[in-house]
Length: 292
Image (cartoon, rainbow, N blue to C red):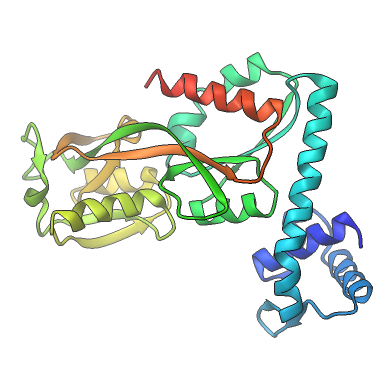
């Protein structure tokens, strides 16, 4: 049994596809399939049911998966620890981030970290929270910047900051002249939302649910960049975090009452030992969060 075989196995289990797993791992699909077959022969058990349109774990595969993830995570931790000892604050650091934070919080500030710690080989992955949790559990990420809370017994969650949630409306919208908007004022409005899996979508829906304000979702997307032009065109309204609202071209941003805030923090696997690079990155994030 070899480490790269376990890595390929976890990739196929995560993607339910030999082809997608090969793309993620940067190898040819026949080579990846061949290594999985060798792993099955070594273990004397069939790990996957190869169906016509998908790949499913067998009972043996489901049993192996958490153990394989633990092995890969421990290998990565050992590699990171040795690199930290050899190079001080250096080595590899894999950081995940949700799409509603990458362009607004992480990207504008990241050069300060890379300037201060040039020996850290930083890898960034942008995904929704459920996908980031999977990657953390598989040992492919060291930590991830997400919206809070994250309900997973494997994850250690630490809050960094809270930011206001505002209402974006078109310039001719009936609420455009308001100094503040109360949640009941939104009743009957068409709302533009992020797709399922984005934690800010949950924040927006919870605000409306708590206020018993039924809204009609007329558009769903993966990014605010697609939402703002539609709001400006008068096709609906949107609830947006403060930092994203700065890019709301041709829209009016109105404070929401009662005030609502989203919680932002980072998560890591509870059993993961943080190396020097990860410790430095967390300290840097906390310093940047204090400037918001």
